[in-house]
Length: 387
DNA sequence: GATCCACGGGAATACACGGATG
DNA sequence: CATCCGTGTATTCCCGTGGATC
Image (cartoon, rainbow, N blue to C red; front, side):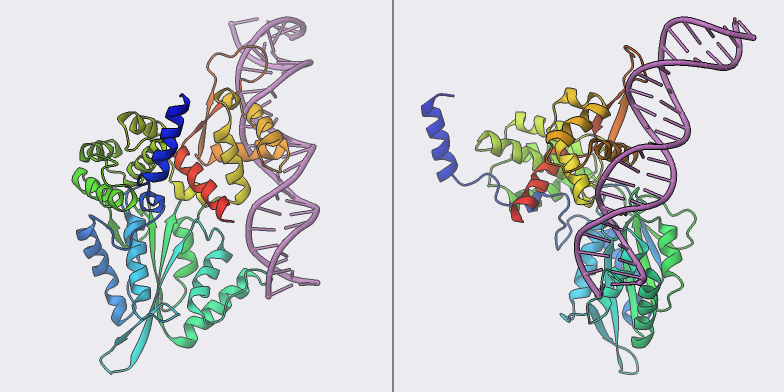
């Protein structure tokens, strides 16, 4: 690039409308207020939830593949329901036959953020009670008693949605059920991938997006996140096709494409940008929400792992050495190594044992990243900047 | 003093291989 | 030939520690 080109590029980025208006609009971990393309499913969900307006409602289980809009739909619905009164305590007031008003509370809990029995109870109690609930200094048993008291004292109907059950880092659905079923006047709605075989509840299935629905999802997001003409309609269709029904992956690729193009100083997203973007989203891909919900130091290790040269990822040992020495992580090599093994255990990375063993000793494993790396970098770095 | 949670670090174990042993 | 052993790596496991907060 010569000087004139450099100057021209600066002028362009300074004066021209920016390619990316709003990364959040494209982020797979951000859900819209109004979900797109899930109308019929939303209706069935409402059918299930509706009895809660009048009385206690049955327990339920929402299931379906990754990127089929489960979280998007349920979280949008619950935030509407919780916000309908505008009251601080997340309740809807409906008039019953007798004319008395009775509150029904709708609470959405992400099991990725509430990873222990304690945290699960805390999340429910905290959104239910007026005063804030301490996060330390009291035991899980005490917390549970307080929750029981709260439920009893107000005789309110409570519906709790617990999202992302059954992942490596989160509670199993059966565990959530064991915790919540004994609580009177509380009904639960678990959301997970697997069909709930051993749970005797009403199941609500989400199926993967059809092609045209996924195109709609992307089109809506792109129009609010990117400059007009940043992507052609044909490119959006291509991304949707590539997504193969998975909105998470399709959005991750779209987000990445915008980021590649912006980084390169392009005025619109080129086919080569899209190709590079797709390469940064492995298939199958682990949910970014899972990765971003990990403890801070794990995320730092992951961030450093992405930044390594490919050959440094040729063995767990060398990756751990490199990360511990200059990866911006204040952990010993031994600990980094253990973290790396944990990450592969839960599927966030994958260990691939080298086929040809050269030399002595057990052959090392190469580490593959199984989540959208570019999106992770952008979101992770963005979080840091805001601090 | 209690409590939760993430961390820390090494000890124990598994595995691959070649060579020795029964 | 089957098994064991030694060596060097890779991988798993366990449990105490300490910060932060009540």
